[in-house]
Image (cartoon, rainbow, N blue to C red; front, top):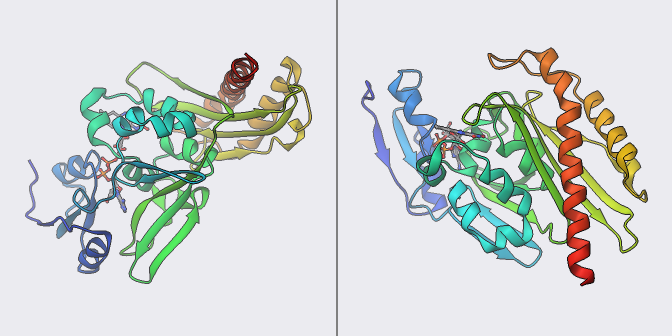
Length: 291
Ligand SMILES: Cc1cc2nc3c(=O)[nH]c(=O)nc-3n(C[C@H](O)[C@H](O)[C@H](O)COP(=O)(O)OP(=O)(O)OC[C@H]3O[C@@H](n4cnc5c(N)ncnc54)[C@H](O)[C@@H]3O)c2cc1C
C-alpha cells in the first residue's frame, strides 16, 4: 500500500508529459522501481506522470538502425524481428533479465536507463550499442550519446522536468556479439557484465571491436580495443584485450553482493568470455554468408 496521497496524470503525447512534469511530480514508466519506493515511503511525489499513453513504446526500424521508445519493455525487445536483425546484443541482454514474464512485460528500457543503477544490465548494453538518447524537456528536445546519460550511481543526466523519449541505435547487422554476466544465482543482480561486438573482414581480420563493462563501476566502463583492429583474433589477442578491460576498471563498485576488490578481479574473465562469444558469433555469421 502507498501511504501518501498523490495526483495522477497520463498525457497522450510527449509534450503533454513535459507540460505535466513542469507542475512537479515524478515520471512513472513500468513502475517497478517507483511504486515499491512509494510503498516503502522512500518517495512521496505530489503527482505521477504516467508515460503509458504517450506513444513512447515499441521498436521501429529506421534507415540505419532502430528507434527504441523509452517505454519499450524487455518483452518487446525480445519480440522484435528488427532488434534480432539490427541489435542482437540487446536481444541477448533482454533474454537474461530475471523476474519472469511479469517483469519483462512491465519494466521498461527507459526506466532502467534513468534509474541508472550500476548493477543493471541495460546501461552497458546501450553504451556498447552506441545508442543516442532522445530527451525532451522545458527547453525543447536534445540528443545525448547514451554514455553521457549515466552521470553516476543512481544518477542520470536528465535535467529537472526532462523526459527520456527513447534511443536511436545504429544497426549492428553483420557484427558478432557477446553478452556475459556473472551473478550469484539466476535471480540475483549482476556482479559484472560485459557487452562485446566484433566485426571481421572477409579475410577474418578484426575491423572493429567494442567492449563495455557493466556493474563493476558506478557507470558503464568502455574499453579501448582499437589495438585489435587489423588483427586476426586468436586466444592471445582476446586474453590481452581482457587484460586491457581489467585495467580500465579504476574505481570498482561495491555492494552487498560483492566488494570492489572482487568486481575488479572478475572484470577481466567476464570481458574475455564476452569477447570470445562475440568472436564466435562473428565467425559463425561469416561461415553462414560464405555458404
Ligand atoms: C523482480 C525483478 C527482477 C529484475 N531483474 C533485473 C535484471 O535481471 N536485470 C536488470 O538490469 N534489472 C532487473 N530489474 C530491474 C528492472 O529492470 C527495472 O526495475 C526496470 O527496468 C525499471 O523500469 P520501469 O519502467 O519499471 O521504471 P520505473 O520504476 O517506472 O521508473 C524508474 C525511474 O526512472 C524514472 N523514469 C522512468 N522512465 C523515465 C523516462 N522515460 N523519462 C524520465 N524518467 C523516467 C522514474 O521516475 C524513476 O525514477 C528487476 C526488477 C524486478 C522488480
